[in-house]
Image (cartoon, rainbow, N blue to C red):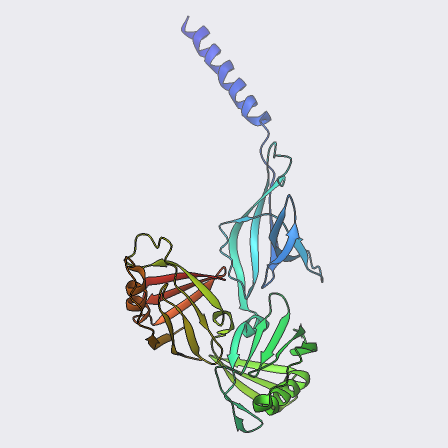
Length: 333
């Protein structure tokens, strides 16, 4: 009986081994990918952002529609990575049949072109002092766009970076056509820089633009305040549960003048900005002196706006803070 039982167990063990041997195992392979320094718009199942990828010695970038498990991507850096690839059993119709997982990062290099991203404030053009709040160049390498401003007209155009030659070409430029005598000389000088520069260097927070080896201009990383200069309607005030029908609104101009209504009395005054940060100081404000019965909104508005020391514009909304505390929120009118 014992022999029969041992034989039965032996047969069961063999069957289990054969079963495991015939179970389909996912195919596994590894591959080296080069991941570009910026994502691009693409369309898979719907609109999305795709990695730019080179593999198998390819010279041109191609779109990569999936995700890479374990890979933390930072825009502005080019990566060479090793990935493990497995087949996905019964993938959904709208998903890839392959799964990618990071094995290791072989190389991580900051793309010089992407270091241009942001606003660069200019304090001098052609040897003449400029207003740093109103004179700057803005680069958007993610969309290959460049713009400039010297206090009146906006300039905008495309740009193209040649990584192998380390050169940058820009233009042609489109411009608004207002005539502003007080800054006309600065606008001509800025236009000349944008048309002529073909090289750049970023060192910390300082940008230098060159024509060959000739320095055309130096600029410092700063802040573009143009989205602030608008009409705003208040939607939230710290300490006020419900604005009711008492809605403060105000206008902030590029000449650093503030005017509006606290919901009853009109006011006007000045405000201060910093060319290199989001710091702001509004006021002192002078207001009319009408009696406003059953209106606790206006007093709270004037009290809170006097405390504001920084701002943020996001999704067409203005956030006014004292350090990290939100005091006033407003929407574009």
